Image (tube, rainbow over all chains, first blue to last red; front, top):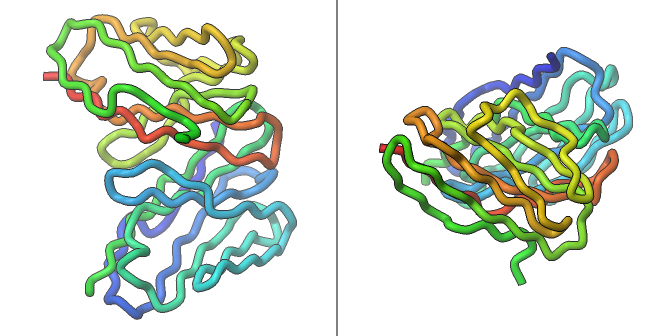
Amino acid sequence: GQQVMQIPQYQHVQEGEDFTTYCNSSTTLSNIQWYKQRPGGHPVFLIQLVKSGEVKKQKRLTFQFGEAKKNSSLHITATQTTDVGTYFCAENSGTYKYIFGTGTRLKVLA
Amino acid sequence: DTAVSQTPKYLVTQMGNDKSIKCEQNLGHDTMYWYKQDSKKFLKIMFSYNNKELIINETVPNRFSPKSPDKAHLNLHINSLELGDSAVYFCASSPGGRNTEAFFGQGTRLTVV
């Protein structure tokens, strides 16, 4: 079945450093969504990318969708302690389920 | 005001017991889901419902029985709880269709002792 892997699994950064998580699928993706889950919280939708090569920005966050639509990345510039949490990529292919990536846990050291 | 609400937030129970988790959404969405999140944070689909009809049952043991009395509610009943059922269970909803986002409830942390 479809697998969506994320690397790294864990990342510790000093506050102010940059952070990137990568999402790789074994199959072509219809779209890619990114969610953030704070510690003890629930996944919250951040953004969706649909087009090949698409790039979107939200303040310090930059999201990219690969040209082949099989990978994506989330880059955070100058991390802050509020960025702590687990970041998931996911695909909604319209088949009544969201396939989530394995997640990247980010810890930001003040 | 909560869009997707689950109860209870925490559930501690003994092996062999039966328990239920309730979920309600006030977003008017047609599709609802149950996800299981294990200790490694993997989010795995268990069930999805569309307009009260079961669409996906992702090889979940028969001890888990979802019920959707109407499209705003999706409950999960678990029989004969086992240690391996300990996890966080998330209810979610979406408008359905591609390119729509999922809205999650706050989760139910189930601990089986």
